[in-house]
Image: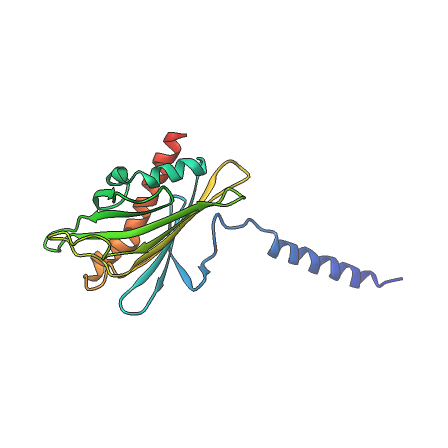
Length: 213
C-alpha cells in the first residue's frame, strides 16, 4: 500500500500545478510576441511595439469588437470615411483603376505646426479564407502616383490586418504596421503618432463597428 504522506504530497503538488496553469487567460496576446513588447493596454486595446533598423518601428494593435467580418471590410474599403476614425487623417481616397481586392489608396496625415503634413500611398490586397478570416495586406507604394505638393510620403509603410471571427460572436482584430513615418520627429510627437495614434484609431473603429451592428 502506498505511503499516505506520499499520496498527500503528490495531491498537493498536482493542485499547485493546476493553479499555476489553469488561471484566467489574458484577454488578447501575451506581454511579448514575435519580439513585440507590450507598450499600452487600455480599454480593451493592446499595443505592441518593436524597434526596427533605420529609424523604423513596427506597431501591432489588437482588440475585440462585437461585429461581423464583412462589416470590418466594408469600413476599411470606405477610404473617404477614414477622417471619421483614423487618427490625424485629414483625407483619403482610392485611386481609380484598381479592383475590389487589389487597389491603391491614399491617406493624408495632418501634422501639428511647424511639421509638414504627410501622405501614405499604398497598395491593398485582400482576401477571406475558407475559415472566414479576412486578411488585408498593405504595401507602401510612394511612387504609384505623382507627388502631392506640400506632402512628404513615408518610404516605408507596410502592414497587415487580420480579422478573425470568434465563437462568441465577436471578431478579433489585429493590425500590424511597419513604417518610418516617425523618423526625424521629436520623441513626444513620434510616440503620439506611432503608439498613441493606433490606440485612438482602433478604439474609434471599434466604436463605429459596434454601432453599425
